[in-house]
Length: 273
Image (cartoon, rainbow, N blue to C red; front, top):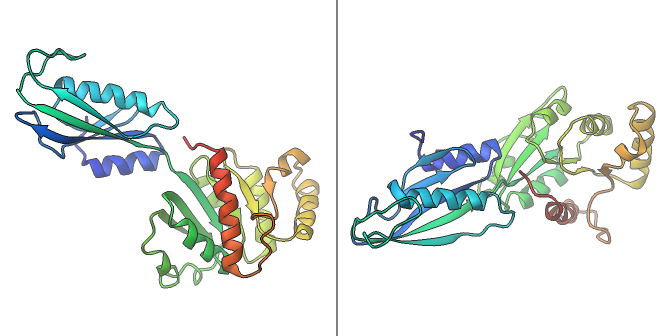
């Protein structure tokens, strides 16, 4: 049980892309080992913090690990009576009070990487930043990633990571967490093509999407086959054009809404972690 604040422990689980459970003493009546607000973070193999030890903590850890294994786990409250008439699964605690403990699952969040933060990319980032996910913004142009330009994301719910990749943006693909959904929309078709080829060679990604017309995708398919050596089934892993069918507007914000809606559908089909 390492000495680490619960906030740091939750951040560590998120960085590792591991599920966990935040355990909090919700209410205390009478005497108890810890007061309301005491917290414990439970991971698959580690715990951080304490809610007082004994039967309360052991039962909470057991249940938390059961929740970690459930795909749609929800928060739940456990009641404990602390007297010598109640024998818990892990012994008796006879402090004389009663405690309720709240268990809140900490699922692995979705991860998205936008390669190309131009007009559409920035509008898309603004939409996705309102969701609890890990958002990676990648571009070869430093001015596009300038702090003042990305200031519109200052109130993001998402955890935003900015990657300036002036020479080989495709190298960022290898640094992305497993299951990351990749959207390719750079300012340069050659850069787009290189990213498509690299994405198909990067194991463990989520969905891969390429912005552009059907004609652009037809050219890319031929190039990925002839020069990249990819077979048809592999090339089909890339979706292009991206967005929701039937939305034909050309404004950056309209395209971004369409792409975001399509991506949310992909989220429904995938469960990170």
